[in-house]
Image (cartoon, rainbow, N blue to C red; front, side, top):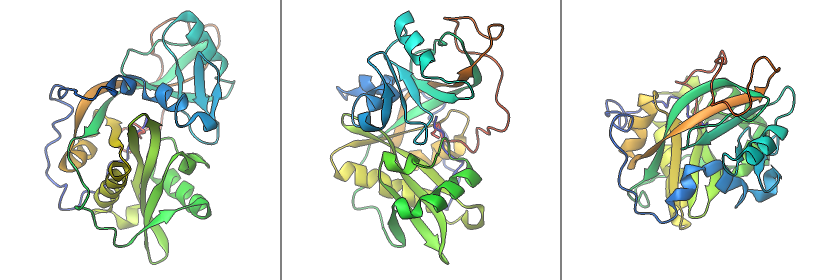
Length: 286
């Protein structure tokens, strides 16, 4: 959910006010903006259909790609279809603007409010690509190791196939990376932003985020992203890049539950998963 790591704050991001969590959403002029209310569903049934499983009522990403899943709507039939995609021992992530209705037979292990931000100014021409390089399948083991260390949100062995990723290497090591996650008509999400602890404080997260956003814009799409509402450092960084609050989002991590733990149709709630720091997660995202 994404869930973004608390970024390394270089000089450009330091001290910037985290206004997005407090101010009302900006006026929305994009005719496709309603797709952003259920971005996981729009992505799974659109550009990411080839890495989705499910049917007309509910879908999820292939298990080694990402944890996100979504029902088409909150009808009993759609929620039952979503529940069928959650296998014993599985966890899936739900992210949407409407309040999350719990699929039958499931329980939430983490709930948290997030924010969805949209790019409002062009970054083309402002970005230096010095020291950055595209990342590919050959880099996947290092990308996964960096993500496991820094926890930028759900990042699995094939998460890098969701879109383009770029990185910075220092002394041969993958020091930082950023890339693309959800894709829907006219919009692509900036995600997977993380920096190795040994290389923080150099502004790498800001530079990489700007480069990813500029590349999305150059292809004719509009960048957007998610962050935990409490992650003020990440929000402040993205505001310096021209991202503004579109809306708040609801995020839940759910799993199968015994009969005593879950009532079909109940609203999302329940025990909180341990070890999931909202300061280190991207509403992934992360």
